[in-house]
Length: 318
Ligand code: RUB
Image (cartoon, rainbow, N blue to C red; front, side, top):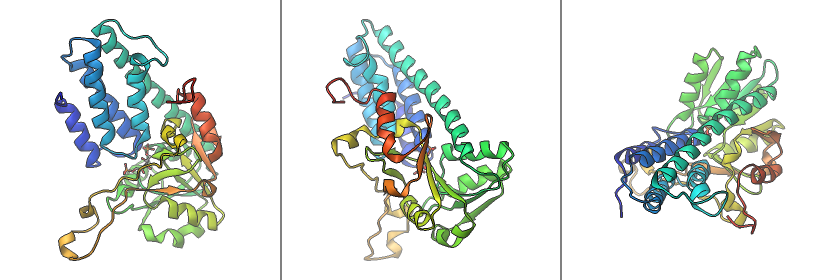
């Protein structure tokens, strides 16, 4: 088996350790690593290049199992030109390399365009003077909040700190330096601040075929509390986060992370420490998803996603 390129290994290590975090950033970094591997490959034939890049893509995709955006993007980059769906096989090595690099650059353009559209659609959902509660760090959510702020909406934001790795601090820092009045709370304070909140807005790691949301651990609790308080709960996500595997009944795997992120196990002898990275929010607790195609009900995401990119081929299979 071919060894992975040094840059690919470096990217995998950054994704695993959360030095690169958030579904979009992870997908972008994985695609750049795939592009680097395509450029520096010593393969002699298109087939050898495909084998090498497939190995690289699989290793990247395995770095965080709960990231369909990364999986979808990597798969599209390779599938379009090497499989029967949507293209012809490249005849020469250079043609093959070019094909993959073109797909990567088209993904980057598409992702940037979707991001800008979501910021625009999302900002429309935020009323003048609203206080928005958010969780973890989502680059999509901060883009919406910064857009609403630039529109002069005088918003305020409450961020949870997001244990165990405190990604909420990244959000708080980013928003505060953009000039948005920002408050940081511990995760367990969400119910206590709800009376000051007008709406809840979070990102997404995955969306299932029945419109459920997979996002940072604690999101499901937040959505439940918002539902009980009759507050709107939005998730901002590009359609690339739809997980086509859930169409065939596959349950989105929830990444279990190192117990040491929670506490030093040696200080708690005999105690079992669990550290799930994500949880599943039922569709009934979600008001809508804010996508690049507008603000849509959870049940409509599947229809939009299957039109948008080639999730399903003529035979109904991936
Ligand atoms: C990040 C997280 C974010 C989504 C969306 O979790 O749950 O809400 O990834 O982010 P982690 P984005 O810090 O464990 O990666 O909108 O940037 O794709």
